[in-house]
Image (cartoon, rainbow, N blue to C red):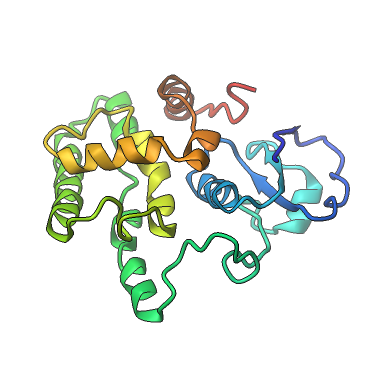
Length: 221
């Protein structure tokens, strides 16, 4: 169970977390917050979602998180909620999965490409870099003969990557990477992905507001 209340800068602080729930301070279009929502859904953890308006942060939120950023979440996941394991059991396998952050740490391309297009800049170089990285990921799936990046079932790594790929649909840039397309189709069948996904039109509308300098954090509410 989750809820999506709209919290503005003038709002009073929310009440205590109901027993058996986790409170998640989020922004609906934030990549990092979506990762947490995916995992919570996948593990069946009851949670309440509070959407923070990042352009008009309430005072009480700055007390909870002095940096004023999202996500704010305090809970052990696999260790505290063992019903559905999303990480490999061995430390070595975990380390191999964690090695994939090379992609996550360098995949801010959609913001740079969107802003560049808006400003009339040549983004062909960025687009080429993005396609190269997607090709490498495609090769990884082919070589290992696996359906997901952690094996033949969804793992934490797939969930950590998904929010970027959900947004990459805006650019329709998976041509030439058939295994990545199949991975995307498999991910779209996952209940946690279905429960947290935004439509391509919603992402386009938010990106437009973002590059226009007036991000609409409450779009769709």
